[in-house]
Length: 517
Image (cartoon, rainbow, N blue to C red):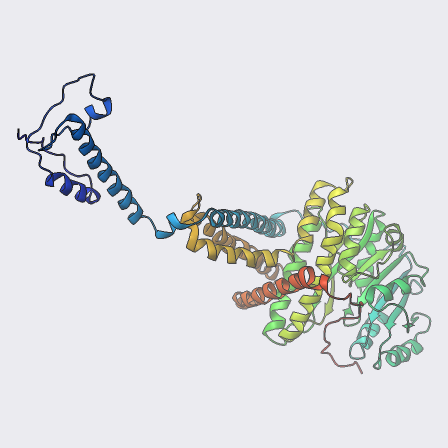
């Protein structure tokens, strides 16, 4: 008997076209509605019921239906595979896990970077709208303590005379100040210049010519500190030119018995030399006018910078004295004083002038030195700071962020690299790569902007808005710093541990100023 099949439903997609063609080619003549017979499987009651010409039994009919249904199923699977990217079905499980791990790392990096961005913004807004703390500014008349002024020098014939002559003009009371140039094994004319000036004022100037012992600034200051009998000492690098009233401003905070160290503001003397010095002038302004003063306002952790600053001898001795095996004695001392319960005070009005690098190679070398010293302090003090219970939470948090400042540069570069990788493979991840890239964009818009906003605010507070015209060029300095700091960090933590230990030595910035006449 010849039967007609029921009119087939229109295929849902082109994927079923081959199945429809196969179905039409079969010798099917007439539709048959199968009765609800218990002998017919339930699955077949809802399937197209057909009889095929030549079929000897219902079993043959069932087999034919199964073939058609399997063909439809296979065609649908093939269509789905064609619509998806080829790598979806080919990406191995290890590759998927690797990409997921990269995504997690990127999320963590972005989170930390955003914390630093918020920190920058908080400091800037505090300087613009917050209460400003200058608790020692009004101290002008007092029983000024006896102080020793160290001038750290190593081959400083070009600048040492300027520093000594400026200190001789100080308004600090007569008989209350001793100037001690600390000449550590200079091989140029530094010693002769010091002795010539000292011969004019032997009552005030007591040179210390160091000819042996461990090299380096910290080791030299350690030996010099053992020779003094004052309770407070002030430190200047040889290229600094102190103003007449600076010593009183730096000594005034020590009337507070909780203060262990004091830091003044550093201002470039050669800011107008070229584009680099102008950019560094703005960078210094942001770091001191905004960053340091905001930390002072918010009772966080102002940093002792190793020059234009003072130390209470009792505080230094209570935390173990100078450590002559460190690369950055200033950062190391900042954290030992913090952990020891001493305060570091910042006096923004206490300005002193220094020379900044005038060429990019000198700047890069300076950054390499600073990075290695700061990262060494990170390795030494992060655990101690976390374990110390006496440090207030706000100071501990700021101290930890300050320790990690240089370490963030290589992580930022790593974040950019991970973003590029995930940009091409984000479709295999459960979280779209759009959100990963969005995080980096947020940093570029918020993080970088926050740092530049800090610099711009410093120029505004200084009353020198004309400097802002070159602010866009700061991006070049940012890139150089990012690459240099990352390079130094990788060398320090990955390469140098496998090298022979190197001895410390004096590593100072090139001097440009000629010797004073």
